Length: 521
Image 1: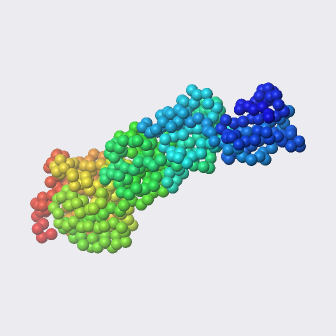
Image 2 (image 1 turned 180 degrees about the vertical axis):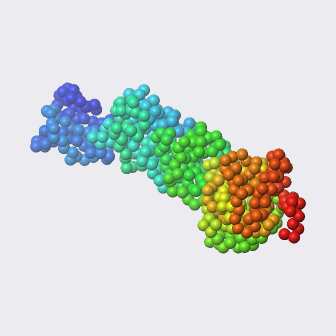
Image 3 (image 1 turned 30 degrees about the horizontal axis):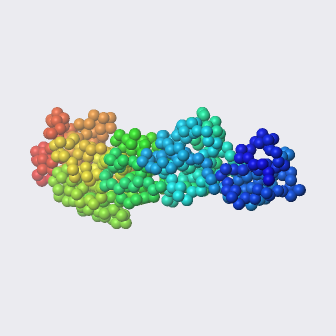
């Protein structure tokens, strides 16, 4: 029998009193090992190495007393059954303590690992996390003898996706501490070794909501896990994001408009009014289509109402959107509320009868659930003066805000702009409102009395164009209406309550007749 040792170095060999020295590993099973084995004479000057079930070197060797450079690996496997100690990192404070040392995850893996490992005397260890399922994981794994000082990383997988920068590590502690002393990012570690085998993550939270913004559901949700999927409609499979550092913990929209979105727990620390308050958002992932929003056509007494409605029906016949119509409702707020009430979707496109729809407009814009609910205003090309801006354009209204809106007297002069809005610079329609003297005058009057109250460079430019430039049929009545609207604004001294009467159809007709006495027009 030859001497044995579990910690091999030159001193161990010098102290050996037999021709050979058995070098053993505490994690190997030697219950049936033949320690009486001796090499053939022609192999007597070789170091004999036994593999494990994982690597070519199990940590089991027979070393000649006389120094040998040749190695012989042709031996049966020695099963490793033991494992290194385990540092268990907890993303969820209430999860079980299953490590030799258990610690709370703070900010990133680099700082969390260093904080604990510099206090231990381990040579090697496993680093595991409570977001992974180790039920079938083989902790007897060990690296090759040529990779002992690397940081070994096991990928994490979640349903159909896999994350290379996983949550399970095999660490040579002294090397890790030395190489990370001045390291800022774990990704910069000098010798990372990514293992092909992966560890499944435990399921993440799925939060179903019926809000028109994900902001409130995030505030109301108590995060027990690092990430959660928030969905307005169906569940969508999320990607497996890296948790190595704050920058990799990204918000990931899973659908257009973010009706389904992956939200890291850290978002709550930044959230004020919208998810975009959080600095790390990844929109590069494949996004599923957004649910189509209804379309509502609003008409009152417009000359071309039927023609423009037929144009809308023709353009939308192959689209997935449902088209409704509201006709003859007096008052802007009442008409908009009636239109929103018709809709069965959270938002609806309101199309106005004084406009001819742009054939290229596809009604496929996705409201952004990562923002607060708002209305989306599309451009209109005014065919009487060539102005292109939101006036008369298709508006994608948030139905809940329209239906629940306060009395018009409590809102601003412009109903739509009394709410959060966003302008989408896409021409949705053509404003062909000048179809009679009165209708040309009415639209111009209402718009300029409103524009006169806005003191911006854009509004002043638009007001000047309305009052000085007009094209086509009834151009004179457009100019008259525009200038009469400005006069009306001055009469009211900008008083909001007085200006609002200009949005009442009956008052407008009486005003027109009182100025021009045109009962025959």
